Amino acid sequence: MLAADAIRALVQRAVLAPSSHNTQPWRFRATASAIDLLADRTRALPVNDPFDRELIISCGAALMALRAASADAGRGTRVHLLPDDTDGDWLARVELTADPADTDLAALGPLIEQRRTYRKAFDAREVSPDVVASVTSSVAAQGARLLTLDIEQRQVAGALVAEGDRQQWDDPRWRRELAMWMHPRRDGDGLSIPALAAPIAQAVVRTFDMGNGVAAKDQQLLTASPWLTVLTTAGDDVQSWLHAGQALQCALLVGCRHGLQASYLNQPVEVPKLRTRLQALLGTVDHPQLLMRWGHPTEALPPAPRRPPEAVLEAVASRADRGCTPS
Image (cartoon, rainbow, N blue to C red; front, side):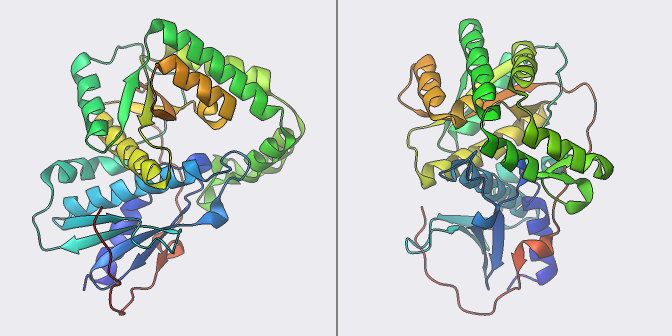
C-alpha cells in the first residue's frame, strides 16, 4: 500500500490541472493500490456548463496530471476509465503498478508546476512548425485532435467568440454564476480578485451587461495570438470528454516544454448554436471541445490558487479494491 504522504504528494500535483472558473471539480479516493478520480458535482456550473462537459474535461486534465506526477515519481500506472457504470461520479482509477514508469509521461511531470492559464496578450513571436507538430501529436496520442485555424477561419472564430460573449453576458443567470466564483485568493479556488474589491466586483458583474466590452477585448486577444487551435473529439460523451481533458493537459505540458502557455476562448463551444457553427467552420464531423490560444508569455505569472489536498482527498482506505476493466 502506498504511504499516505506519497498519495498526498501525487494529489497535490494533480490538482494543479486547469478547470473552468478554477472550480476544481474533482475528488480523489485512495485504495490499497490505486487512486480513484471522482467528479465533484457540487462544484458544477449549471448555467455555463449544463451537461457537465467542461467539468469532466477538467477532471480529465487532473487525471493526466496525476499520471504524469506518478511517472515522475518513478511509478508505473494503469488507467481504467469509468470503472463502474452504476456510479456516474467515479470517472477513473489510476492503478499504481510495479511496472516501469512511462518515460514520456515522466518527462512531463516537472512541467506541471510551470503551466499557467495566460489571459494576457502574448509576445508577437510565431510558434515554430516543429513545436506545432509536437503539441499536435501529443493530443493525437490521447485520442483527440488539435486543429489549427488558418487566417480566414481565425476571423470567423473571432466573430463567434464576440457573439458568444454578448449572449452569455446578456443572461443574468450566467452573470450571477460568474460572480459566485469570483473569490479572494485566500479561498483557494475560483477566479482570484483582491479581497477588498471582491464585493464590488461581484456586484458589478451581477448587475451590468458588459458583453460588448468583453467581446472587443477577446477579439483583440484572439487576433493577436500567434497560434489558434480547436481541440476536438470523435465522440461527445463522458469518455470522450475524459480523453479531451487528458489531451488538453498533455498538450499544455508539451507546450510548456517549448516555452508556450495557453488560454481559452470557449464561448463558441459553450453556446450550442455557436458550437454547431464552429464545427461547420472546421469542416469536420468531430465535436469541438475547446478553443485555445497559444503563444510565448511576456511575463511570469503566479500560480492560480488551489485547495489543499486534504480538501479533495478521502482518507486512505484499507478496504479491498473493487474490480474494474481497463479501457
